Image 1 (cartoon, rainbow, N blue to C red):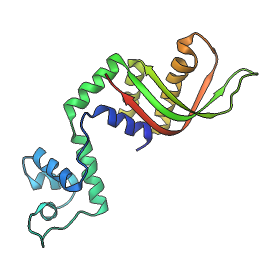
Image 2 (cartoon, rainbow, N blue to C red; image 1 turned 180 degrees about the vertical axis):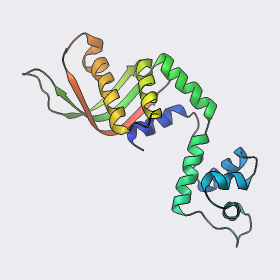
Image 3 (spheres, helix red, strand yellow; image 1 turned 180 degrees about the horizontal axis):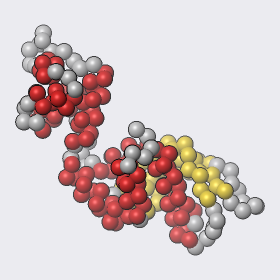
Length: 185
């Protein structure tokens, strides 16, 4: 998961996901009304394995392995705050969002301008159309590169060309993203 994808995920949540594997397992069990069978099916392991992970008996407890820990994390991420995520996504698509980033920006510009790429801190309001395009690309399985292209185009128009008032013909290259955060609402 890249920086942009992580930033989108953080923006859609209002509370952090449980941090420990035990807390994540408790969440999955609570979500499935205590059914270790449903949690086991969801994670692709046996029911007995889930029972060993959550037992209170000191000698019988077995921690999940690294692959299972990742599967537990992905299952929790997919099920964490679904209504809040839908509401915040709709809000971003309607009203836009504020994009905060530190990344390398370069330009393809007319002769005489400084087109050397350099690292910049940028905070910019972006419209709902950009949010719709980003979420549509993410839903279609687009990778970090395609999301970077969408944001480069939007930042080029909003930040560098000031919504079309200057620097016509300037094409922005956006790379080496150190962080990407989104503020919704």
